[in-house]
Length: 499
Image (cartoon, rainbow, N blue to C red):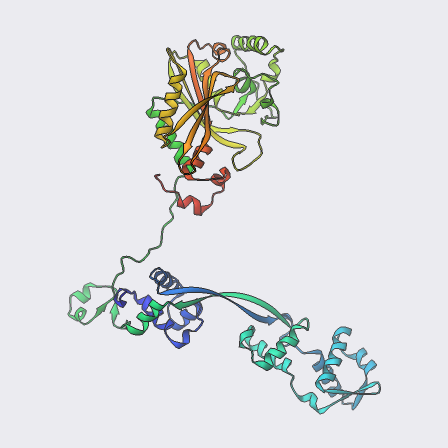
């Protein structure tokens, strides 16, 4: 790399880091040494990291700070308090018991101060009295270190000489004077390539200009000037604009696919009666799916729905004949958060009674389930229905295969299963190339006569449906469905608009 491709900011940083003053330089030191603003330094460092001219090394250092609080501008050791008191009292000696009563020290500090003063040779014991020695005028190594700490506020342990290190170890064992801390700092260093450019290339930037103005063009001065080069390969700051959530992207794509296949979208309420959510679907009133463990019931003053008596009669008869129990309208009147979008479909078919139609509904549904890596209590479901003459299960499998293929899933297979409201019933399986596994997706089948006849539909009705979040996991390579809703900006920004 040539120095001519460097920005003036990079050149200033390069020259400083190559100097002797830059040893163990952090960003603050580079700001002080170059005269650049901190934003310029940060921007320049990022450019140089991209070009492999500098490296950032994280270093952890141990330092200590005062722990004697703001109320004390200068700490005084207990032994110095004792020595000063005896000197100021003007006595040759003082009894140790008397001194303990009058001096402003706690018992612990007093005992420690007497022991330390005796060890320093500042005092002597004569029977039960304390005598002050001339050596008490000498400043101890601990006092010298504390004086330095008062000035510097924070001291790096690596900067201590042998005597200061001894004083540090002594103070460390005495509470209330120093506090040890470990601090991490980012050290900026030149790489071998950066050092080679700094030492062997012309990085003089004093005569460089970065803008070609009309004034320069109107004179001959531009001929004597050196212009800084533009590095078009340097990284630029990315702008993270708002965007559609990846799940919403997938929902819009699915809607577009279904519309292109001749389907029309229908919508309905999130709150449904148990009649449309369960009973019309030929789900018995004692079915486990209707228990509180699986369904969210709404306990509020919602107006009771007025059901069509003709439909109620047919549903009641089908349940009594098919499941051999006494069907109760009171159970049907309960309100639930819909467990699937099928009640929306059934209401549409009941109200419109089309002889042929392709419709789909897509929206949120709710299940009272434990949150796991593959289950949510609230998720999205897509459901499609086809009514008409001369329909067969083969038509349904063909529609599903086309739908999956347009989503980019090429390998699809089906196997028999059971649902209370379809007969025959199938489960679709798709092959995921990235994991080399087959996984379950949508369920499907032909609505039973007990379902279609109760709402006045005469022809065969093909139905299919399933959760969108599982499709999203396949699309975006997720292993935990909860990641879709965690709103991690790193993931949201990494998902490409087109896959």
